Amino acid sequence: MRKSLLTLVKNLQVGSRLYHSGSNGPRVLITGGLGQLGTGLARELRKMHGAESVILSDIVKPEEEEIAKGPFVFADVLDFKCLQEIVVNKRIDWIVHFSALLSAVGENNVPLAVRVNIEGLHNVMELSKQYKLKLFVPSTIGAFGPESPRNPTPNICIQRPKTIYGVSKVHAELLGEYYNKRFNLDFRCLRFPGIISYDSHPGGGTTDYAVQIFHDALTTGKHVCYLRPDARLPMMYIDDCLRATIEFMMTPAEKLTTRTYNIHAMSFTPEEIFEEVKKHAPNLEIEYKVDSRQAIADAWPMVFDDSAAREDWSWKENIPVESLVDIMITNLRKVYTENSTAKTD
Image 1 (cartoon, rainbow, N blue to C red):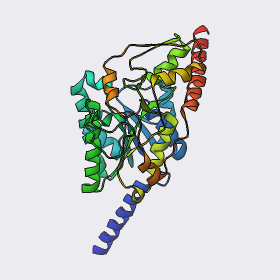
Image 2 (image 1 turned 45 degrees about the horizontal axis):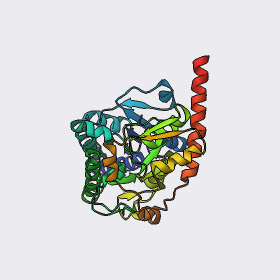
Image 3 (image 1 turned 120 degrees about the vertical axis):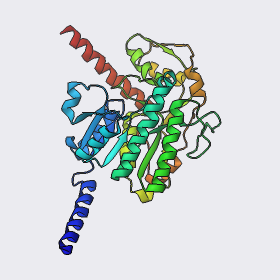
Image 4 (image 1 turned 90 degrees about the vertical axis):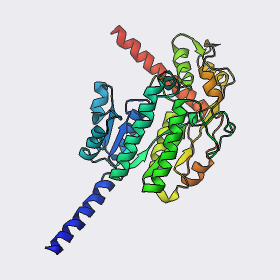
C-alpha cells in the first residue's frame, strides 16, 4: 500500500512538472489584453506556441476579429476568485499583467488607479506565488521622479515618482523583488519607454503625442502638442517592445542580476519628431499648447541607461527613429486608405 502511494505521489510530481513546462511551450494569460501591448504580444506568442496557448483577458468586449484569433475570457483583475478559476481551468504557466490605468488617466481618478494598479497587482502576484507561475509586470519611465538622474537614468537610483501611476509601478517593482527573494517567485519587470504603434490609438499616457502626431499628419495636417518643443523622453517602436518582452521572459533565471530592467531604443523631443514626420508630410503644422502633462514629463527620464539589460540578456533595439517614422507613415496611410474605401463602398 505504501509503495503504491509513493508511486502515485511521484507520478503527480512528474505530471506537475509537465504541466508547468508544457510540451508546446507555456500557456499564457494576458490581463488587460485588449490594450496596445496585449494583442501584439498575443499575436507573437501564438505564432511561437499555437493560438490556443495564449488567453487574452479584459473587462471590455473584444471585436469579433480579435476573438477569431484565439481564446478570450472576461477577467476583472480585482476579482481574485475569477482569476484563480482561469489559472486553474486554463492550466496557466505565465501571467503577463498589462492591466493598469496610465499616467494622465490615473491622475484624473486616483481611487480607481489605486484599485486597478495596486490591488489588481496583489491578486496576480499572490496567484503566481500560489501556483508557481512566471509573472511579467511592465514598469515605466513614470516610475522615476524629479529627484532621479534624468540623462541618463540608471537602472538603480532614487525614484520617488509624483503620479499615482508611477507610485503603483515602483510598488510593483519592489513587491516583485520581495516575492522573488522571499517566495522564489519568478517575477520579471521591464521599464518601458513611451511605446509607439500604428494599430492602436492613444490611451491616456503622457507620451501619446508621439502617436497622435502621425494621425494628425495624415488627417487634419495640424498637430496640437501638449508638451514643450524641447521635452525629451525615451521612446520605442512596439515591435522592439514585444521582442524585448519575449526575449526577457525566455532568458534563464540564472542570467538575471536583477528582476527589473530599463530598456531603451531612442529619445526625441516633439520638435525633433515633428521635423522627421514633415519629411513624409511636408504640409504638417504644429502648435504648442502646454498643459498639466508637461509637469509629468519634466519628472521623467530623458534617456534610459539600459546597460544592465544589454549585458545580462543581450538586449538590443532594432528600430531607430528614422525607421519608426517610415513604418508609422507607411502603415497609417494604408489604414486611412482602406477606411476611406470601405466608407464609399
